[in-house]
Amino acid sequence: MSNVKDAVVKRIRALCEEKNIKPNELAKRAGLTPSTVYSIFNENRHDVNISTIKILCDGFNMELGEFFSSPEFENLNQKIE
Image (cartoon, rainbow, N blue to C red; front, top):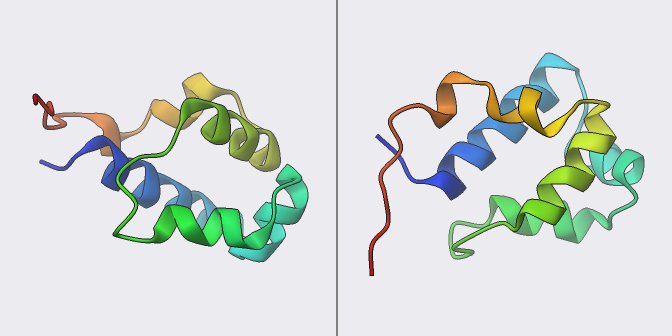
């Protein structure tokens, strides 16, 4: 099991590999700065907001539902504080 942020990072990395897109190219396609994309991969960052994920999905030319319809998002830990 993993947390949501880890699952998002795994999914973005998998999509980049699948589509043969480097993070810099994804940033350009999505209209984000490369530093924004790379900051998502930073393990010190605790979360990624849904608006940023939507923008990245636009860069991948996919819908949010398709992004989240992936094994990475099954059996996630629920964070309760």
